[in-house]
Length: 129
Image (cartoon, rainbow, N blue to C red; front, side, top):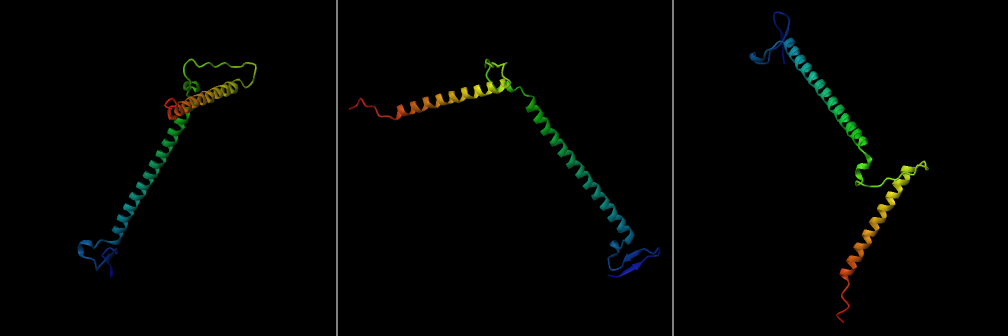
């Protein structure tokens, strides 16, 4: 490749066709322009990513707060009796433990009924002999 200079002292690539015979300084400024545009786009994308991450973090924080604000008694059927033992310091713990035991007992009773019902269906009738 042969480099020559024009009347103003700018470099010109002489082995390139005349349509592409652009002074080096102009090419450099064009490259700088495109480089600057790419840097601006990269910065805009970085800011957009940070905004999206901040928004997602706020959304998860909001969901966590929404969950924490919910009434803990909503999951119990209406009419559930909450008797607190005012004399004991762990009144709520005692209520929770009692409710858990009742739930386990109810589940065990239901399971026993299901087992008894299934064994009655499987046993052959003895009146046929």
